[in-house]
Every structure is written in structure tokens, then in C-alpha cells.
Amino acid sequence: SAVFAKIESGDVQAKVLEIQQTVLKERKPKLSDLIGKNGMLLPIVWVGMGLSLFQQFVGINVVFYYGNVLWQEVGFSEGDSLLINVITGAINLITTLLAIAYIDKFGRKPLLLLGSIGMTLTLGIMAFIFTFAHLDSAGELILTHFQGIVALLAANLYVFCFGFSWGPVVWVMLGEMFNNRIRGSALSVGASTQWMANFFITITFPILLTRFGLGTAYGLYTIAAAISFFLVVFAVRETKGKELEEM
Image (cartoon, rainbow, N blue to C red):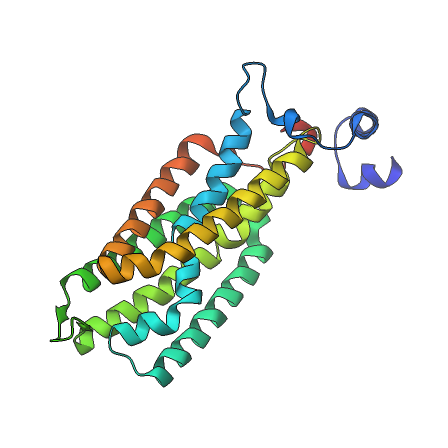
């Protein structure tokens, strides 16, 4: 209690007692804990699954898994494509570290909203360029020098926007948004949803690229980024400064 009093204000004893009671009630997590009285998943679980889904549906792993193919597809050499991938990875790392450092200052929800806006704009720019670029006789995209520069800048700004928002912040949210009673089970469902979404995006991108082209693929990711904004606005609660027992 003495240590807790140094970092908390208000009725410290009551908070300590509340935490102790929560710990005593803890048991092995069960998926049935996530079912409400109406027989449906608890609303907060749906929100967690939504965050996990849209973290992947904005297409971030396409940039990392298929970056080399993507940039060669639009006319960059193999060497330049590799260099772009390295730069993109560095941008993601730096922005993720910055987000972790400042997340308590700015809050989780504002970062998610700002990231959604940035990703929607940058993905939209890439979708527009890839859709209206000329094709050569083999059906390959040909970008003008200006289009190539804009697409490259948009791609790295997209990674920047993801890196300070949906990349690290979703994991923080998943760790904070569930109370102790359902936390273990809900985290398992959230992580599973994320990996399934990642798998889906990874296997569908080559199909979209072959059958419909880059413009369509990035158009779909743009729509997902736009939807993610409204998900955060209407369904996500700020967890900054909240205790698990309050969630």
C-alpha cells in the first residue's frame, strides 16, 4: 500500500482491496467468459476483434512481404526495390519506437484516429496512381518519374502513419481494454483474429495483383483504412489512465 500510494491518488486502500479481490477471483481463462447473458460475444470482445482485423486489413504486411515485387511491378530495378524495402523497414521501426515513447502523452484513441486518416490518404494516392498508370505491351505498369516519386513518398508516409498508430497502439489497446475476468481469453481471441487476418491478406494479395491489378488491391486497403477511422470513433474507448478493473 505504501508503494502504491506513491503512484496513485485517492483511496489507496480501496484500490488495493479491489485488486486483491480481482486476483482472488481469477481462474483459468475460458472462452465462455466472453459470452454475455444474451448468448452473444461481449461487445468489448467484438471491438478487440475489429481492431485486430483492421490492423491487418489496411494491407501493411503486403508492403513488407511483397515490397520487392511491388516496386519492381511499377518499374523500379531489383536493387532499388531492395533499398526501398530497407528504408521502409527503418521508418517503421523508428516510428514504432516514437509511438511507444509518446503514447501516454497523446493517448491511444487520438493516435489511432490520426493514423487512420493518414493511411486512408496515402493508400488512396497509391491506388489512384496504380489505377491510372499506363501499361506496356506485356501489361506491366509504367510510371512516369513524377508518379514514381509520389508513389514512393506515399508508401513510406503510409508506413510512417501505421508505425505511430495501428502498429503498436492496437497491441497496447488489447492489453488494456479488457478487465481481469476476461482478459486472458479475450487476448487469445484478439491475437488469433489478427493472425487469421494477416494470413487472409497475405494469400489474397497475389490473386488481386494478378487478376485485378495493384490499383484494385490498394483501393480495397484504402476502404479498410477509412472504415478503421469510424470503428475507432464509434466503438473504441480511450484506455489511457484507466485501470483494468474499470474496463
